[in-house]
Image (cartoon, rainbow, N blue to C red; front, side, top):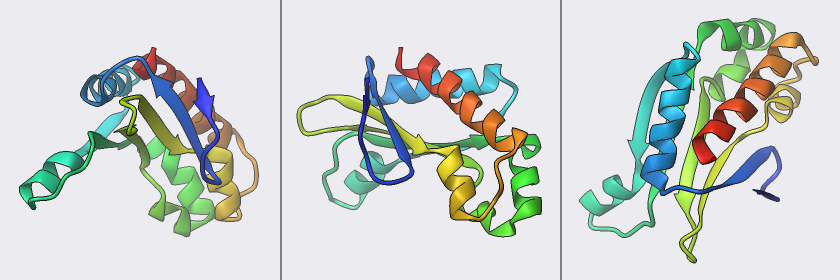
Length: 133
C-alpha cells in the first residue's frame, strides 16, 4: 500500500518492524550489487540525547553507476545522492518506508528524463518491494 505524502516522496507500508524493514532493504541493496554507505538510527540517537522518538531509521545507499550520470548533468543533484530511504513508525504502530521519487529528484535539479533516472526509479521500486513485502 502506498500513501500520499509530501511532494517528491513515495511512502509504502511495510509488513515488518522498522529494524527488520531496514535489514531487508540493506540485504536487497547488497544483493543488487549496490553500496550501503550509512545506516542511521534516529530513535537511538534521540534516546542518547534524552529525547523520545518512535522507531525511525535511515539507510543511505547507491552506486556511482547510478548517481554519477545525474551529477555530471547537474552537480547539485549530489545533495540528494546517494539514495536514501527512511523507515518509520507512525503513532498507530504502522511502519512505512519513504524515499525520494527519482523523477521528482531529476525535475528538482533540472535534469532531463533519461535512462539513468528510469533505472534509479525502477531499481528503487524493486528494492522497496523486497524490503516491505
